[in-house]
Length: 136
Image (cartoon, rainbow, N blue to C red; front, side):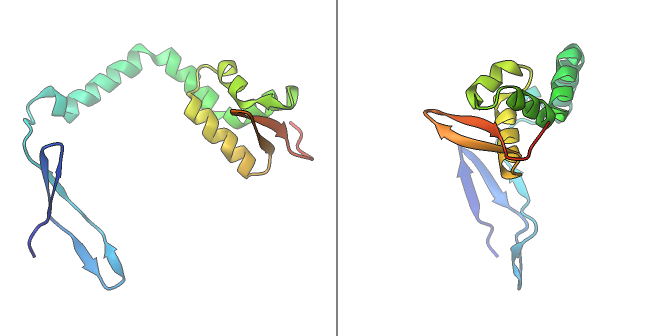
């Protein structure tokens, strides 16, 4: 079987192992990348891991606060919404600045999907209210 190649931004990728089974197409595509210097620090896994470790160590307190808040995000959001029923989703972000907005959006969507809050479109944002029977 001739290996197909894909060109992406000048980099050729050859598909090494395409397994097709009766039940469907599957399992493993192994890409071999050509045209880069693996000794260049940009491509060094070890160097990028060291850099990430240094970043985590230098900013430990910031990350600790962020991860603690993210682990309790549902409870924090329910507290905020119960104290200010009808709050705009946009007003949540400044109240929890340590947590990225995308994470807050996903948590709000999850709470709405679980039926704990009601999310209604209002203008360019959403109004958030506790669902009937929800107490925090």
